[in-house]
Image (cartoon, rainbow, N blue to C red; front, top):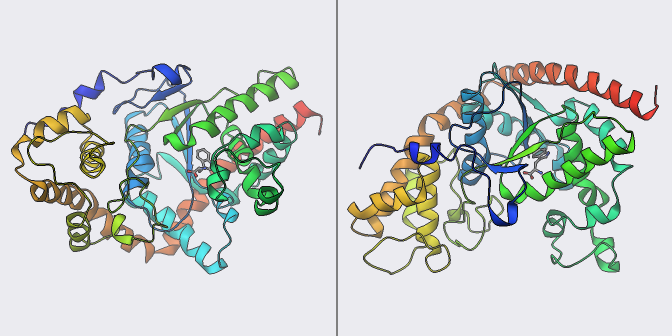
Amino acid sequence: MPPRSACSRLGAAVRYLSGKRSSPTVKEIGIYETLPSNSRVFSMIQPTGRIHLGNYLGAVKSWRTLSSTNPESEFIFGIADLHALTVQRPAQQLRDFRYQAIASLLSSGLDADKCILYFQSAVPEHSELNWYLTCITSMGQLNRMAQWKSKAQQAQNSTILDDAVVEATKAGLFCYPALQVADILIYKSTHVPVGDDQAQHLELCRTIARLFNSTYAVDFFPIPETLLTPAKKILSLKNPEKKMSKSDPVQAGCVYVTDTPDEIRRKIRKATTDSVQGQWKFDPVQRPGVSNLINIISGLTDRAIGDVVADLDGLKDHKALKDHVAELIIDEFDEKRQLYDDLLQNKDYLDSVCRKGSDHAREIASANIQQVKHIIGLD
Ligand code: TRP
């Protein structure tokens, strides 16, 4: 195989998305994205236990790349344990999930000396700003968000005004995006790397930041840019019409960072593909299974889909493709899995990382909340 040609994407470092996403505040992250110095980059993941390939390629890997290639910027990555409360679970499970989430971030290569890593619930200013922002956010703005509808298992064209929907939807789930806006704005963040399922919440964030600034006639909150992670959505290996997900009843469809090499080989070998022989093609509609595998290779090797497809010519059949994908995943995850296991044995260390992170985060958040209180007249 030819050497990795990351340069093919390098030229696209500041590629604005065309068409529907014409806003300059949304752009796809280049592999070695150069951020303006003094940027403050912020993002979060929910603690849902160990992370899978979709979480890794969709979020954590790009956080690692951004934070290791932009020494002039500041990076804050949090575990959204308050958002996690929109799903009820036993307290001990939440405790375990929180540790698993922080161990996943560290074992995936985030450097606690370069990034602030912390739990959302350890910084009460998130909740405080959430309230102030909820007071300027209209129900209509929240009603238009797509994510609460899918999480509440409602149709995308449903509305909170339907009797059945309003009864079935918890207020926390409906107001979830306002807390997300507070997460971002409490640090006056300038850039937010997320997968495209979060793009709508980021659009809301810009709307609310502008609304706050205009309501109080200040230029306080920066308008944060969305940095879309380059990896396209990773789909279930067994059902490549759906997103790879931990809650997929068919667990063979989901590869975890913690899977052993044998488990990875088994899952990839059983991945749904197709019976088309001959030429390889990236065609998510006609050939979703094969395209998902190509997408995984692209995400793992930082190469453009076209380059990946061109290199597949040497692979004679689906089995060869699967073996190739399995070995790439094993290579990527093997050390991470061992580190993850070690970290989970060392809760004191995890506690110390989070304590240091939340102290640092609180310093920034409390200074900002003081100013917000002054702006709105609560001082
Ligand atoms: N809602 C995000 C998700 O489900 C997680 C999240 C919470 C987040 N707060 C955030 C992401 C702030 C970016 C910025 O993935």
